[in-house]
Length: 196
Image 1 (tube, rainbow, N blue to C red):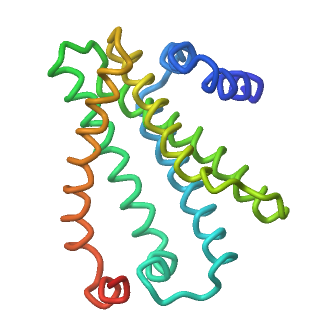
Image 2 (image 1 turned 90 degrees about the horizontal axis):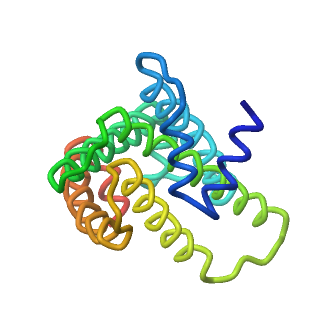
């Protein structure tokens, strides 16, 4: 399994659609996609929490509150990932896509895994004292968009990754608006005031 993960991870950067074909062709038991997404979410929350603590120390801002409430942080991330899975499934179906909701969850789980490993490498490089170019952040965002568009195109059987990318960008703005409403509803007023 480690060999499969390594090979598919590397293939993701050279042929993302082929990598997603490998991921979607996996034999999966009931609930395997949701379990994979939850596992990646928990690992991501742990790594993000540790990285934030190492960089900023103690913090009383919104991020500090999230670190003090890891279950809330994991639940919010998991919920937003599930929302993303629903959106790419429903949005793709609207345009004639053939992917299932389970495929959508698996797409998000794999994307989160790839981005988690990539970010971990960048954090380790930072702590090792290696100079990171100023374009590392924007390049990571661009990578995220390209990979997600390629994965969705493969999942739904779309020919054009460029058209899928346009749909992803529009969907992203929709997700941001929904999450903004949820954040205001879930996060204590004191934590929000520290952000302002």
